[in-house]
Length: 268
Ligand code: URA
Image (cartoon, rainbow, N blue to C red; front, side, top):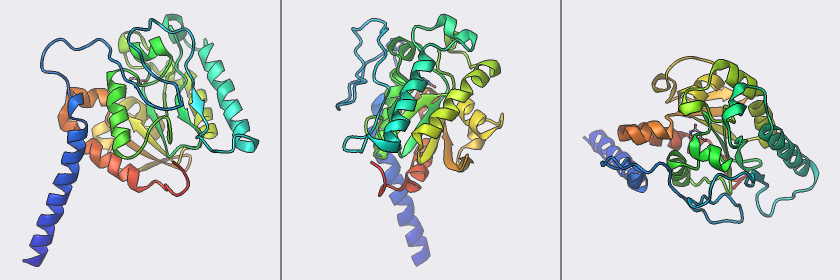
């Protein structure tokens, strides 16, 4: 009987915990009407400039790419890594390694801090990201920011966000193997320079490429993998969850597992 009671309370705890996450992200579920905004705006506080402003037209000035967290020693080894990362971002901005560069307004190298708790890796920029030169700034990106916020992460303080391919595939199609192969050296170097404690891959494409499988995300998620010794948690893509809010629950499970493995004593 006592065991039954304990199980019952545990269930209630879990339900409460999930409801808090669902509430926090509730307003990101797709509107029921047909008038979905083509792009939306978000504003973040901070000394870290990645504010999205709907009135701005296609930016040709690249926004700030990465930062060393405030108060950190930016000289020495970390300063050198930061400079190498800036150079890598510059190379990405002028890259012509695959045909995707032909249709881009801006390449999208990545954004966030050095030595983050988590590096988030998506598939490739969409229209908003192409316009801004920044990853995950459209509707899916705002949703992703809420997920991160729910476990105390943000691109301005303790996360870094990037994609498998740095230029927008036309009509948001999946990147082709030749395109992701051409872009992978950038991502490998980013991981090496950024040195995340853990990696969160969102969606089938990013998860499959880094884990090295063609399996679907539904069967990949729920476990922790390792990429060059770095723990990697795969989850659904925020766009998929916007289309199917039922997926919020497994996402929350994945985020909690990710959160539990972070050593917050050392970063952010
Ligand atoms: N989807 C992605 O996978 N990446 C982005 O940067 C935006 C949307």
